[in-house]
Length: 65
Image (cartoon, rainbow, N blue to C red; front, top):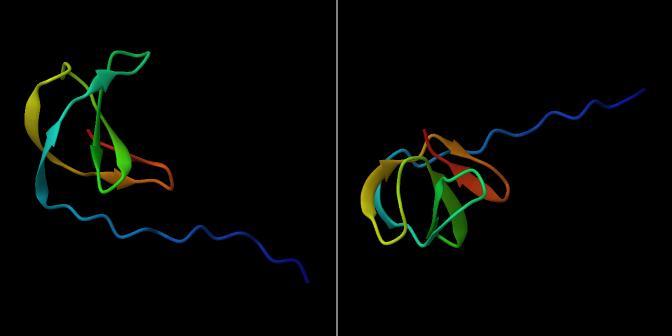
């Protein structure tokens, strides 16, 4: 019998967190770091500080909307 892959959903901490943007990616989104993971935020420039709410947690990166 074949087994089918079922991705496990990761529990995302939806509390608001403060983040400082360090640089830009090739699409122009700001990149910061939380808990050792990269966080991509549209509309922010390097050295800007923002309070963000995480919407998605991936294996490598956190994505914000």
